[in-house]
Amino acid sequence: MKSKTYVFSLVAVLSLLLVNVVNARGEDSREPIDPFWQGATVYFMMTDRFKNGNSANDRVLNRGQNGAVMRNFMGGDIQGITDKINDGYFSDLGVDVLWMTPLNEQIHGYWQDDWGDSYPFHGYWPKDWTSVDPNFGTEEQMREMIDAAHSKGIRVLADIILNHTGPKTELDKAWPDAWIRTRPLCDWKKHNFENTVRCALSPSLTDIRTESELPVTLPPFLLKKWEKDGRLMTELEELESFFKRTKLPKAPKNYLIKWVTDWVRDYGIDGFRVDTAKHIEPAIWAVVKKEASSALSEWRLNHPDKMIDKKPFFMMGEVFEFGLDGFRYTPKGTSLYDYGDVQVDFYDYGFDSLINMSFASHASKPMPELFQLYADELRSDAFIGKGVLNYLVSHDDPEPYDRERKRPYEAALKLMLAPGAAQIYYGDELARPLFAKGAIGDAHWRVPMNWSDLDGSNTQALLRHWQKLGQFRQAHRSIAIGHHRELQAEPYIFARQLKDKNGLLTDSVLVALGLNLGEKQISVYGVYEDGSVLKDGYSGHTAVVENGKIAIKTDYSLLLLSEVDVVDKS
Image 1 (tube, rainbow, N blue to C red):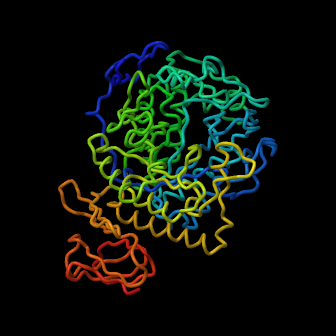
Image 2: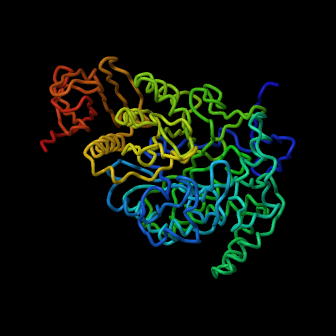
């Protein structure tokens, strides 16, 4: 049977056997993504593995060290992130946005499976959406971290989960059956909507009944916990106020919507990275976006001195196996995700951007081919006004680019100079190892940050390489969202130029790769007029365009050129 494109009502009750089709929100109502987000540089870190800023919270909740290799809590926390914000680490990298794994309170025990005993250090086994996990820190420390980022012009994304709770363990009670299901398990051999959305991803991920509109009562263990914390009445009153205002039923998904948007309202979180987005009815995400946008507006009204600007709330989705250029379940030349029996454009349901899971494989292409592919794809009708986030390595992609870190300089060039938004995964900039002896599966990608390697000159040089690329990319949005033109094949030279909505040129860069060291002369191919003063963002040297060319001497094989008004003699 030929696939069809369906859209879902915001409040439709979806049968377990049938996908109801109600046209509630078409493409005409979708706003184009803000250009900032379309080309942002995002730094993604596993909170527990990034930096230990407070050793006092290393051993809490009686969590032990009996887990399998790389499957225990190891000390990274919110304070460690704040410390690196304050010392300028992210600013020096040209980072626009911070994204850390979920900070919500996790299950207290550990889960046993074929990979060994695992604690929820990763943040994806939530127990209480209303609390910060004590291994990561406190709610006040989270506020301080967000404030510190905002003070440096850096935005913060919260990683949110609506699809599942953490598993039941010896220390953790299961959520009531009215909230969750443990069966059926998703059957990947039967690729369709039903076997992707209304099923448990694995025995460790109890699936929330997000299709349900039926009222449910709160789990007794959660009420008891809130009472012990001294906030039972506050939480219940806030819930009553939320349901009265929104007129939403007290169904599981709506409790979660209230909880995930609370931290936006209280602390000014700028956006969401949405986990397991394709495993939930798409219409729910539009409600999340609406409530989060309202929450951010309220925070800004109450904290005008802390907000960076008034950019709309941002939402980015992890739609696993979604990617550019016909990647797995994304039909080539469209932004649709293909469930097999239905196709969904998640951009129609509140998402401004989706994680591009093709880039890690595409990065094996030569740079001219890679950049042209992305220039063409992102300027096609399917992606005009939409965002994608490219990455080389992630916390759960089993096929990262350059796993052995043999080409770290080339990897940086490909990610940071490619069209689209870029995600640096913690330690990419230090060639953090992607292998741990004795580890199994995704534990390899979750090795602690290799800060000690900064004692070596090679790692310092690599970090400077990333910093130069990041700062140039941040200063020149044309790198990410400008019009791409290949000017010369060998050595490879290209230009990126950005125009405003009136067609006026606002930014223009020229990049040359594979040049000789020392003295070099290249044509600027009419990108700049004679007499223009150009600065190389990599070496800091300047040159004047004469007869359509520049002559410049640097110790590097690449040039990152942009125009300056005066010669920088420093």
